[in-house]
Amino acid sequence: MDNYAVIFDMDGVIAHTNPYHTEAFKQFFDKYRVPYTEQEFEEHMYGKHNSYIMSHFFKRPVRGDELKRLEDEKEGLFREIYKAQIKPIDGFLEFLASLKAAGFRTGVATSAPRANLDLIMDGLGFRTQMASVLSSEDVQAHKPDPEIYLKSAQNLGVDPTHCVVFEDSHSGVTAAIRAGTKVVGVLTSHTREQLPPCHDYVYDYRGVDATRVKQLFASGNG
Image (cartoon, rainbow, N blue to C red; front, side):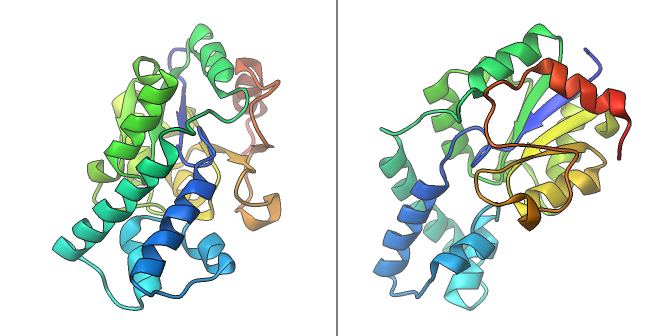
């Protein structure tokens, strides 16, 4: 399967970080006296880039130096909260090993800052297994724009139609569909009904292996 690739989002796909992002945002917004609800977090935080999140909750455009300052503050808070809690979604590392043994090219593509990605890759020890590593700093347009998945496919030397993307958010699934890849919905943050239609769905990676990915290509659906 050397001319095929599997690309992973990070938050909610490799590690179940969303509860820790939620806690970081709560502390951050409380400091700035910005109101929020749990429903807003579900609709306007998961899978979104910080430029969107900050602008939505502050109810005004947040850009440039102000965005960088606020983003650094919030993400630093997240890393402080999460650094002692790093663990993969069940079965992820075994699934990744199965993909590598089967000859798949693998990459990670996240809307999160590189410092968050570095924390999780190094904490879980899979950096060397990813031939393409992209974070928010590596693209101009963020999910649901397909740029990050098109760039990942290019980095991996594989046509997007020969890629499977694992995503957990509406914006991420939409980005992968727009890129022309097959998509597996990871149901850690949303239900199947809350996501655009995917080619397959998983709750975690227990019992998932390279054979299941091969079957997606063999089926020819989508």
